[in-house]
Length: 207
Image 1 (cartoon, one colour):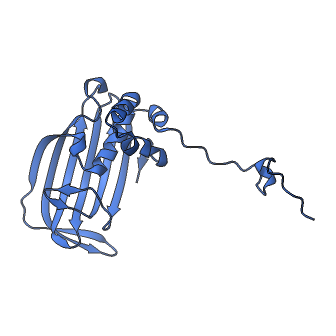
Image 2: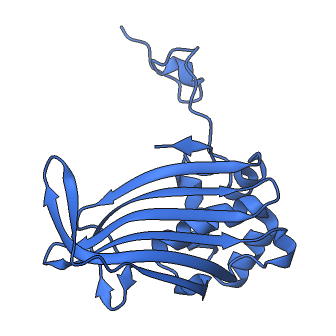
């Protein structure tokens, strides 16, 4: 007869190998940000097929996109974010947008309050986007006209995907001050605590 299992026994009694261990618990956001060594850098590639949200540019709400992000914090704690890629709508292929974007903030962080204003350089071009099921999106420019802009923007006016990337960098630059500012702005859950559920956040990574 199989013996009854006492619920107060160790987990090894429940058909678990005694040598098997549970995965390490993910540490809180600020602790992980504190542990990052500088210089910090990561590269990510993202694709959205009709699932892109909170991205409206010049009156067009884009629903699809493909872009590459290079982001980092230097030894001097300067923040740099570079993004290049395509935005488009399946129902308006002529509204496609190819772009390069760079956002920077100088060091030291004590002279640039987190989630304040950011310097932005961008270059973009309009055209048609067609999507091949194998090769992915293809951009055909409407003309050779490329527009370049230099502006400054507050954190809240940036597109949400950019805000998430910037927030990770701000937390690396100055974890305690960044958390204080997000709490003060009532945005800690959206742009701070959210990284608790991203195992790859605050890691040097390349995709």
